[in-house]
Image (cartoon, rainbow, N blue to C red; front, top):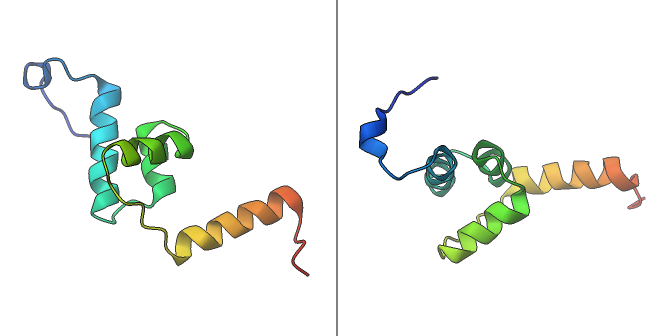
Length: 82
């Protein structure tokens, strides 16, 4: 999807700041997961979480994120739970 916004409407707003604002909004509406939102914003997940904290936005962490984190840990360290 491509959305065009005339520059005159976004005076003083950088592309990075706009992407961050969109990512936060979609995260709050539970359209994006934390990982999706941080990727969309172009920032590491930890930095995105810090930004949410600055704005007092709670991080919702669901089963999908837990499953993905567990898969990532298994890939990094092997399945040591057995």
